[in-house]
Amino acid sequence: MRFTPALGRAGLTGAYDFAIKLLTRERLWRTALLEQLAPRNGETILDVGCGTGSFALLMKCRAPGARIIGLDPDPDVLHRAEAKARKAGVEIEWRQGFASDAATLGVRFDKTVSSLVFHQVSIVGKRSGIAAMAEALKPGGELHIADYAAQTSPLMRSLFRLTVQRLDGLADTQPNADGAIEAILADLARAPVVPRRVISTPTGAISLFHFKAPKSI
Image 1 (cartoon, helix red, strand yellow):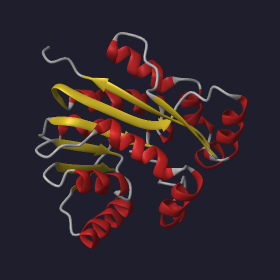
Image 2 (cartoon, helix red, strand yellow):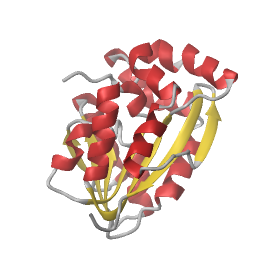
Image 3 (cartoon, helix red, strand yellow):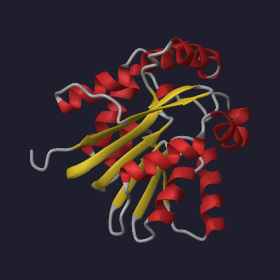
């Protein structure tokens, strides 16, 4: 099954952390996502498309008593994530797999989260991955996404086109710019969905979303 490497090309993976810090106002959107997700001790949380583990480590540092599982299809980034966790002296579980595998891990989660992943995924993968994140939740659980979603201003559309789309191509990224994430989440929620926060960056607007699963089926 195909996946897009962290910076669009396998040879660029080593520069991923630096590029995200330099080009996406990383501290601002990661802090906003962490506050929105609000990890707590005792929770089990799945980080879908965990990449090099930056956000998984933030969650574990905020809630040392939480069980954090990172899921990613790329063995290279998982190796880097493991090394970062070892250096930080924290225990995080790393699993190799796609977003669509989220509901097949044998665990039900209090929260699932994904950041800067679905803009690199086909429209079929976006739908199946977000659906699996929702299916993996316990009743009343929460799904959180931070990603490039609808680019509503000419400036953000231009920046997104010149940076992210140049690296990752048009086929997978354009649906996000056209509002695919909002539409997929609206189907889950059975109601219109808008981001809780939109953060302008040099690579386009990053939107934060929240979905809460029903407490009973």
